[in-house]
Amino acid sequence: MSSSLDIASTYTLPAGNNIPVLQLGVYKSPADVTHRSVQSAIQLGYRGVDTAQYYANESEAGSAIRESGKNIFITSKIMDSAGDVDANYAKCLESVNKINVGAVDLFLIHSPRYPNGAQDRKAVWLALERLAKEGRVKAIGVSNYGVKHLKELEEYASLPISVNQIELHPWNQMNDIVTYCKQKGIVVEAYCPLVRGRKADDAHLVKIAEQTGKSWAQVLVRWSLQRGFVVLPKSDNADRQKLNADVFDFELSDDQMTLLNGLDAGEHIAPCPIDCD
Ligand SMILES: NC(=O)c1ccc[n+]([C@@H]2O[C@H](COP(=O)([O-])OP(=O)(O)OC[C@H]3O[C@@H](n4cnc5c(N)ncnc54)[C@H](OP(=O)(O)O)[C@@H]3O)[C@@H](O)[C@H]2O)c1
Image (tube, rainbow, N blue to C red; front, side):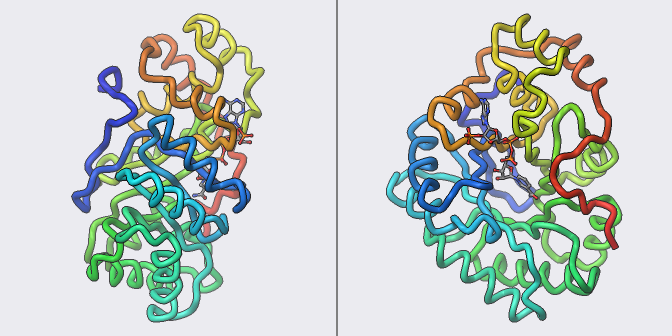
């Protein structure tokens, strides 16, 4: 499947729109840098950008997309609950207006961890459904959801859960969640796909990089693609953006995939709310 992918490849979301398989992440991209980062990524052929209310750079990501004149997929996320459905709706509508590209392609609940747990999660989801029904967002989904959160959501969701965005790399594979999402047709997105550089010296990774003639970062992006994930490498540096997207001219062998798949240690680097109440 993945050998035929290129930078313009997409998967079809349960909501019906198409999501690019490789997108730029902009977590920790300062607002004054984000516009330039998104601009250079688009020039390099990236077709999607992953932002969030929490990243405080939605406007800058949106303006770079508008100026490009291209059809670029944009995702945002709501982290904190504003209270009831109306308040959450207003908070997400603010994002849609800040991004200002028309309908936002994908809007996610950033994390299941809320002061009032299930009650807050429901109020945020129903706000996202309202935005989707009004055509202000095209697809909705979740992030950092464990299987129990997905099951809870399925009890009341009247629109499909299009995506679950979770931390995924060889050292943190969360196979129970990935398997559940695949069964349900939920597209899985891999965040921290480069492990923020922390595994650059890992002996197995270095060996595969040497074998393939690619860098450790390219091997990790390729691993995500071959696992069938949408992958979201972040870089504010145009050279590294180019490198991270130059992953469609090689393939990891079965043996190399097996080696990487064998590294799972539940080792996550971002806060991991998948078990929270
Ligand atoms: N839903 C969630 O809770 C959640 C959590 C975390 C992340 N995310 C999303 O996933 C995206 C990616 O995750 P992430 O940003 O945490 O981590 P990441 O993509 O694994 O790593 C980004 C870090 O690696 C550096 N880097 C990028 N390419 C490199 C290369 N080729 N060689 C060496 N260093 C390189 C970047 O620095 P430079 O910028 O200087 O290149 C940055 O410091 C985020 O931006 C965000 O969109 C979502």
